[in-house]
Length: 217
View 1 (tube, rainbow, N blue to C red):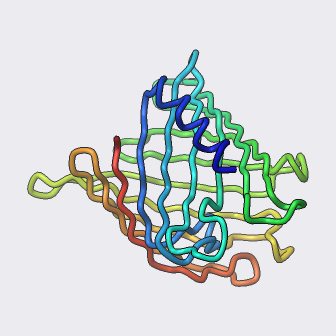
View 2 (cartoon, helix red, strand yellow):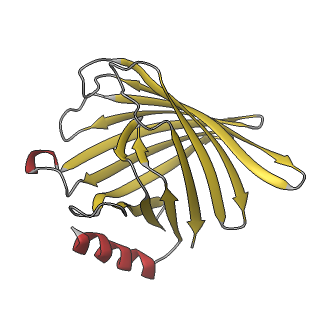
View 3 (tube, helix red, strand yellow):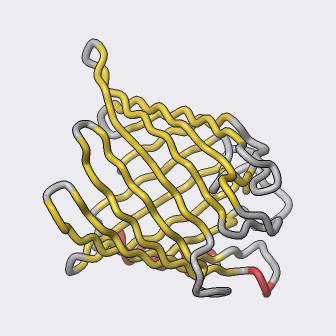
């Protein structure tokens, strides 16, 4: 698994458009805690013929018992501008989970996202489907983001809401909401994330506060 990750990393580095590395106090995805401790998440991306192609990884720094590289995501996205303030993005991601057993060591996810700019607010709604197990959508996500400036300092803030068609527990409904405040300084971004549990049966939120630092390379 490490060989695949670093082979793609080296290839994209030679064609480099964007690269970043993120350090976070925990790794939480869609309200679920996947790593309750310090993680490092490198990401590199190349734009080829209008498609964004990249690789993202999650490295569990504090894990001493098994493979620290717990997740690798290979993705491709295509964004289409419908109007001056309305975009649609179609994405595909192959998610590899090297620490899971053979039956659950991958996901193949298809996504469709619509984004619209309204005044100073960036609105988006996304639908996701794990086509490795089913062609039906299994998760929806709504998000709003904006920014403000105070005495020359630039901040971003946003909120996210997740709806599960069928969660791991078998229940459907709104599972969690999250709120983010970020400070941008040159090529680095420091963020505070607060995660709120809406329905325990749908999504059991264990980690409710995260601090992260992202660096553009």
